[in-house]
Image 1: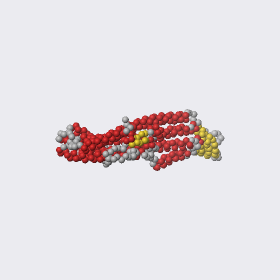
Image 2 (image 1 turned 90 degrees about the vertical axis):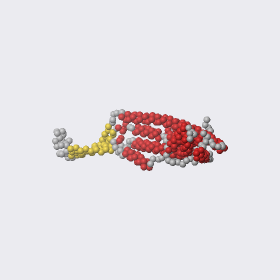
Image 3 (image 1 turned 60 degrees about the horizontal axis):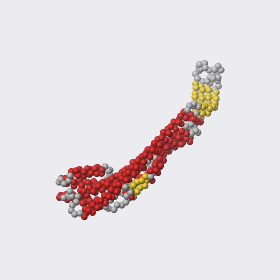
Image 4 (image 1 turned 135 degrees about the vertical axis):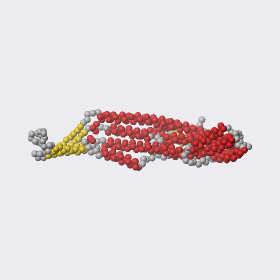
Length: 437
């Protein structure tokens, strides 16, 4: 069929109006944008924002409290005893009665030197500081994960606006095409297969448009899409990740904590050495009351291998963490390698669609001139399909760029203190299209 005739003149007018509008959008002058604009705005700030002042203060106060707790260990211990003897001593007193007394009061002050703050104070402080560093790193990891979601939400909104703007033109053209084909089907001037194809395309496009949250205006230009080609410096990126990635950092701190705890384990911690002073007072029944003062040293020395076993336990725990670090490092390297490879594939897919957009644009320009010079009617349904093909190509290009940028966001999630843009070389996509095979 070459024309929509008869009562279909209203469709002819609507098609011509739609074609003129699309031509003005496709062949208008395209204003090039900075490749870093829009999509990459979310990567420009420090990945991990500082923890809240309240949490920062709470962590500092907790560490200070732990240190003060350790420093409060004086090792001093005061004990007291009181005895009372019944009147009948059951014949256990000596004959002279020297040992007889009604009551005895005793007080003793001991100083457990090895359990006081004099031993291991520096080690306790280091342990407290390392525990605080681990807590901080854990909270910062949570903030990094949250920032990853925020960046991806920014990307989604940016590309939703682009996709919606372009998609609305395809939906409107498909709706017009669907109406015209239904009109032709009523007069048996078109096959039902062609109508079903258009119906399926329209419903798919409408479903896609309905799935985009929010409302965006139609695109003001369909001339081109200023895509980008992103190249990652994988060697520099991996080197930085291994030194700063949140999970790696936490594991490194835990290893340092175990090392410090092992240094703090000492045989002397199990030895009790305590000089003491003891005062005793005797209340006697038939003799004058008396008192005495004793000075001495008490000690206990455990005979066991507990200390060496405890050190060995800490070493094995550290070996587990070392193995976990190695496993995590390999996993990060594999993940980054796969992401970078997929980024390259999506770069190439975007460039391929970009070249296709350029070729279709040239084809549409040629066809527009031919239609303008032609006499009589022509197949407007086929021409509508040409525009739909062009707009769909733009949509795929935008989709590839969105998927690529989400992968860049996955790389950003591995950086707690740096923007991924530091490791990216960003070029306009049009500069790479001609380099494709």
